[in-house]
Image 1 (cartoon, rainbow, N blue to C red):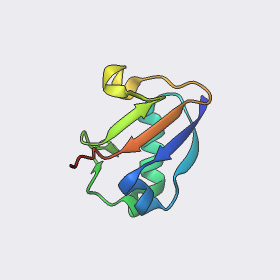
Image 2: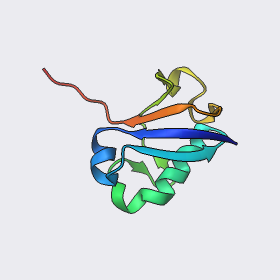
Image 3: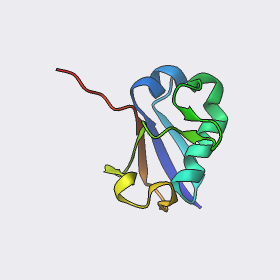
Length: 93
């Protein structure tokens, strides 16, 4: 298992009150599932797919700056010191 850093942005930071968490996980699915299990009460169900114990498809997950949708999605493997960012899409003008 890899030791990684999970950075919480915007609404996740506001609800959890932390911007950085550290976990050990082998892939994105395991990492996010651990995060959801630990902070489900604070996150609320607005952004969760509770059946899969994962965030919903609206949420952006970046691995070292790259969207996991362009990698192997939830199955993307993690390495030591990877940085994962969890965010809602933001727009404005």
